[in-house]
Length: 164
Image (cartoon, rainbow, N blue to C red):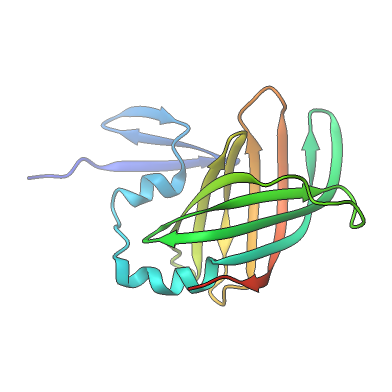
């Protein structure tokens, strides 16, 4: 039996996947790749060690017409196979308190360059980026899907290790 072929074209943070000649807009590049590569449970142990924990660093980008800078904290609380769950928080200045925790979900696939390709979502938008092979640098872009037009870059480093 022949498998349907898929092709993926990345367009500035968005992806268009062609399945049997029909475009499916909004499907993540990693989701499209996941159809052809299953991450076995045994392969998830290095990902769990690398991704679990607290990630903190600066963010910069635009919300509507205003440039915005601040700090982001992502806490990954569970990793199973190639998926993860956790929370995110932010603050505008180092002296500010963190906002309340909001849920996020991530998917990770091995990168041919080493490390992992990361994609995910929260209630406002989508994440895409990379986790390096040493598990100490998480580089993410974020695009909102709602009325508040947001596009941010997060440069996060691991501050605390989670269980795993």
